[in-house]
Structures are given as structure tokens and as C-alpha cells.
Image 1 (cartoon, rainbow, N blue to C red):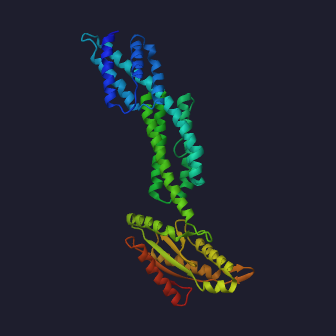
Image 2: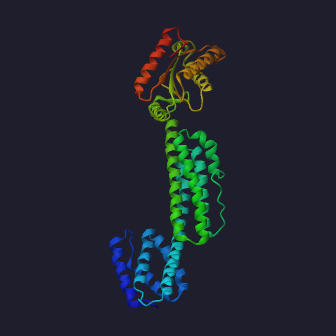
Image 3: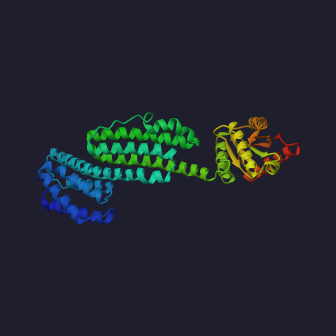
Length: 409
């Protein structure tokens, strides 16, 4: 052995001092003594290198930070090289260098195995308990499919089973993202961000497979962390979408199924921001059923309820998926039209007005003719919400004053 046991004692004494001063992880002296004994044996018998994998397992289970553990071996490598005799053969120095590379790789392999098992358990708990209890099915189903995909990949690392990395466009999550997801995620910036993260996720899995095949376990650990961070970013984006969709669901009017005024300000503000970025117009329609009290007095309140639902049905038949309907009062509704000019909004209001006039409500075998009046305005993103409502409400009042069943803009 080219380095005496006395020098090894000195090196480990320095290491102990360094660890006590600089490490965040708790590392007991017994662990360092174990490394010292095994390293001393490994200098004599290279086959002992594989036993550092057991130390890696122990360190991972003891929550020792991987970067700190790797630096521990880097500290030892530098000191061992520094304590080589001056007349040592250069080949011996290179042997020590390669030996420490093998030690770090064996240690990393054990650490990665323990780390991976823990991540598999965490993903299983997340998939089976957290996501189904907290997230709506439209989001939980694709997310669980990708968690399962990542877990299968992690299994392949610790079992040496073959894993076929699917292209990001072809995996179950990717297919969902292209079709259903695109319809569900209305915010373009969120949609593009998820697509970008998802593509990188698959690219990194391909790289990590290469590291695994080459036995580069230190590099594999770091890239596994990157992949996990990407998955967490997807989960965070889905949590945001889930909160937004739940907020929409909870703010729905129980009678008509449209949104209530509680969600109006939030949604309008979101489209104001988009309009400022894109320069695309936003328009708004306020609609009010004409002589609604007369319907209630003549046919009863149940007929009035059916009239409201009938009106909403007509409205929705003439809108796009990107448009919003809010019930603001008893028989008053607001229609928010993103990416819509005043001219286009007036045409939509006229279509709704004509459809309603030509489609009477059939209630208890009786035909009830229903009409509505409309105020229309293209709005400026710099305007306050209250001012927007006030101005378009004036146009609705003008429509009613001019004989009802009118569109004023």
C-alpha cells in the first residue's frame, strides 16, 4: 500500500473536522470509520469496491445529502493524491484516481437504488391517495397515467428490466395533451408550458437510460432529480388548473348551470391581461328577459325557472367554447366574448335574440313566447370592471326603453 495507515489516519482526522464544520447532513463518526476501514481494504483489494454500494444505501436511508456525500469522497481523493510519495510512479497516481471513480460510482449505485425505491413509494401514495382525493377526473386521469409511466421507469432502474421510452407525442399523457387537454386548458401560456416540460421530461428519460446502461450512477442521480422536478412542475400546473376549474364549478348557478357573478371579475381580469399582450378585442353583452315578472305571474315560478333555463340553452347554442355566460341577477345575464370585436358581438347578440324569439318555451303543453333585450359593448382592458358593467347596463336600459326585444350598442 503506497499510503501508510498513519497518513490515512491524518486524512480522516481532517475529514472529520471538515464534516463537523461544513455538512448540513448528520454524519456519525462510525460511518466515517466504516468508510476508512473499507477504503483501507480496497487499496489492497480492488474487489472490495462493490461494498461501497452498501454504504450508499445506508447514507440514502439516513437522509445524508447526496452532494455532501460525493464531496466527502472528493475530499478523500484530493488528500490521498496529495499524500502520495514524491517518487511515486505516475501510473500509481492514475490508479488511485480510477479507484476513487469506481468507489464513487459504486456508492452512487447504492444511493440511487435506495433513493429510487423511496420515490416509487412516494409516487404510489400520490397516485392512489392524494391526486384522486384532490383533483377532478379530467385532470387526475392523464396525470396518474404519467406518474405510472415515471414509476415504471424507476422500477427499470432497480430491477434491470427493459424500459421502452415512448416519444412525448405518443405516450398516453401526450395524446391527451394534444386533444382533450388542449380543449380543457384555455390559457395558452399554461398549455405551452406543460407541453415544453413534458417534452423535456421524455428527453431526460432517454439520457438517463444511457447513463444507466453505461453505469454512470452519479450522473444518473442528478438527472433523476431533474426528471422529478419536471414532474413536480407538471403537477403544480395541474394543481393550478384544478383550483381554477373547481372555482368555476363552485361558482355555477344551480338552476341554469352557468357561472355566477362571483367568478366574473377574476375571469374578466385574466382576459384583460391576455388582451393587453395580444392586442385582441374583448366584448361584453348584457341580456335581460323581457317581462319576466309577467311570466311568473301568469304561469307560476316553476315556469319562470324553465324560462331561464330555456334562455341559457339558446344563448349557449350561439356561442363558442371560449365564451362565458354569467347569471348576474334574477333574469339578467352577462356574456363575455374574448377575441371579439363590437361588430362581431352585435351579430352574436342578434343571433341569440332572433333564436329566442323564434323558439318559444313549451311548458305543460303551453307555448310561452319569450324575448330579451341586449346591451353590447367592446371593452378596453384599462377600464375598471364596475365602469364596464355600468356602461353596458345603460345600453340594456336603452334597449328596454325603445320597446324591448332589441340590441343596443
